[in-house]
Image (cartoon, rainbow, N blue to C red):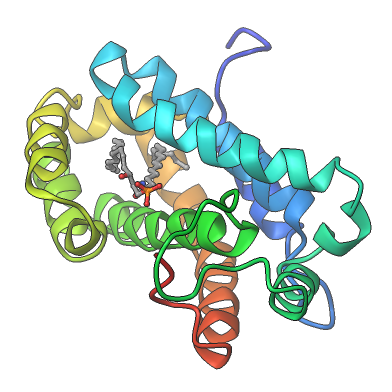
Amino acid sequence: MAAPAAFSLREVLAAFQGCVTERREVLLGPYLRGWRGLIRFLHSLGAIFSFVSKDAVAKVQIMEGYCGGEQRERYVSLQSMVEYELASGLVDLHKRSGRPDSGCRTVLRLHRALRWLQLFLEGLRTGREDSRTSVICTDSYNASLAAYHPWVIRKAATVAFCALPPRNAFLEIMNVGTAEDAVAMLGEALPYICNVYSITQELFAHHKLLDLP
Ligand code: 1Q0
């Protein structure tokens, strides 16, 4: 039996599943809960990933601050956040000024990482039993997030990926049963993550927010 505090992919799935409303709005509460779950999992992979989890935690904390702050009703969904921050001139569009980090630029970083996650999980799901997690992870990273990272971070990320356990061991630490169970679960979870990703992508593209500094 897994300890109650152990990571389970199921709760991440549930969070991303609960993110999207009938009106195709992305709710920030469950979105951030999904990220918290992923970060918890990242911690279990060891200190070599702490430079990643530190940044991810910092971004989630910024967003939790907005969601619990004075303007909390504006931060219920990504749609209401974008509308509010743009209308109030809170978003640095071209270069960063002394203003606090906007929700829009912060979510954009998480959103780009979600694309990596989507590719990585799809790679794991469809990979062969003997495929190397580090290779799947590196390929997914190079096809997504790497484009936004300077050389030092790309280097550190690539080195850290080498520490990832083999595919089947990795699937087992997801805590959903056997490797086969985990693959089945991924097949179920991925459409939800893809959905959140594409709605966000559309929203940010529509408002020309995909390059926020
Ligand atoms: C399984 C291995 C996980 C490896 C994580 C891959 C992502 C590498 C990203 C490296 C980020 C380096 C830290 C700093 C980056 C920032 O410069 C950058 C830009 O921010 P800013 O403010 O400087 O403009 N930040 C980012 O790009 C955000 C990066 C967030 C990464 C969050 C990754 C969370 C990963 C969770 C583990 C998921 C494991 C999947 C299996 C679970 C099954 C559901």
